[in-house]
Image (cartoon, rainbow over all chains, first blue to last red; front, side):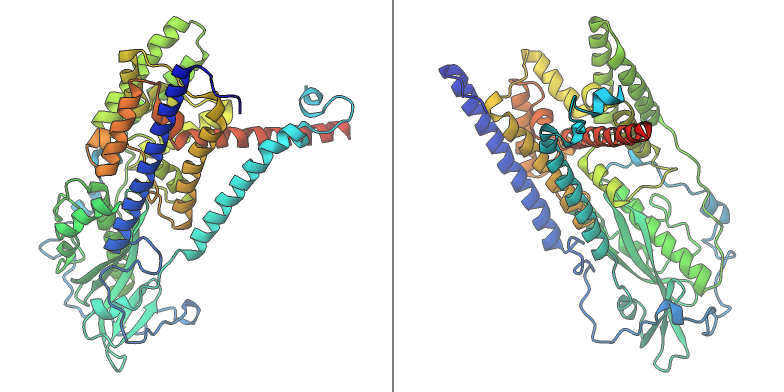
Amino acid sequence: MGNMSKHPREQVKTILFLLFVFFNIVLIFFIWSDNLSERISDNHGFFRGSQILNVEPTDIPVNKIPDQNLEPENPFTPAPPTIKLPGHEDYDQEDVSQYIPPPFYQWRN
Amino acid sequence: LVKNNILRAGNKTPVWLSRINKRRLVPFYITLLLIISAWLIGRAASGHDAAHLVYELIPETAKVEKIGSIFVGLNKDGQQIMGYAAVGEAPGYSGPISMMVAMNTEGDIIGVRIINHTETAGFFRLLDNQGYVEQFLNKHFSQLFAPGHDLDAVSGATISAEGVASSARQAIRMIAREGLEQELPPVKQSLQIGIPEITLILLFAVGYAGHKLRSSVWKKRIRWGTLLTGLVVLGFIYTIPLTISQVVSLLSGYWPDFYTNLYWYLLIGGILFAASVDAKNPYCSWFCPFGAFQECLGALTGAKRFRPRRWNNILTWMQRSLALSAILFGLAYRNPSGLSYEPFAVLFDLKGNTFQWLFLLSILLASLLMYRPFCNLFCPIDPVMAFISESRRRIREIWEICLNTLANK
């Protein structure tokens, strides 16, 4: 690093410049802090392990079967025949197949 | 040529091992190591066990078993199916959104829960406030599940809303196929090209060609043309500048859908292509919308570049540290926007908290006194481009050494 300019005007400019940089660094830290605290306080998926929203831990043990032990086909009773399938009043096959999500730039987030 | 570039006269020591280069190599490789470590940490910590949610989403479930990619909720004796659940995942604004959907055996949705997301909290809260997720309840699996159709759209968080809907559709399709044994028709996809994509391609082409122009007068005129186009189209109309979140998303593997987000691929791909092939960065100097806005302000007062030489190294490393922090944090927590701090959304979308507004105000005032203060001091993209440029140099040197070794043999 070289020597600081001896010219008083240059020195004042440099000091103001450094104050500007320092001020903005402090602001960036505040922006980070605000962003992180908002995510943590909302429990909105910031730290892994606490990402499940609005969920109280359950006492019921989870019965997980490893994939390799699974039988290839669903061994349980199939769904009852009362399912409202394509004949359902809200079902519109053409709409489902034609739906294309809007592009990125149309979404103002 | 190879000898001149690679070997020092006399002792045949490769230049890349010389003392001067070692000083540059150490921080380069430390940075690379940190990025790889953060990526691995993020990778190891990713994933979630959502099975216990099935008990809450499917009433009277006493036992949960996983069949293929779906969960099956069973009654106490395990003989009757109470419902099905599955987890879908789709890209949101700054990373994937995972959602569990539960359905009864008749195909009606009886429970939904967002398991994981990395969206900006303020935007995502809009979904909560408007009860967006609750809209899925009691709908039949054969419905469209599209914002603006059978779901109320959420103004101000539309990407997040589409991400949630898309992850729900994925889960619904899994249950329909594997649980209810029904097949929904495939969703047709078509490449979407609009004004932003065409503008971006033109800006890249003009910016790239403009670098090579010899006439400084024409170069200046064309550059002002691209800057103003970038400012208006990419800035004020569509608000789609390059951000550090997009870089982290790229590194994390959170790539959006190609068909509906061609712009993202053009922007990232165009910059990487230009930087790696020709060591040029047309984006920052030719059409970055925020850079253009600062430059316009600077042009009003004739602002000039100001950077005290004594502080040059410290300022460079400060900027690099800010960028590296944002990248490492984003990768380790798989949260691309976790430490982003660019004031782009504040200027172009008028959205931000008090600190972001203060930061923007400070930058804009400084733009009247010095040339592009944000770009020169704080922008995280500049160090990223410098790192790409350094990587390119390293790869070229290693390649030339290999060629030289082969030539000597």
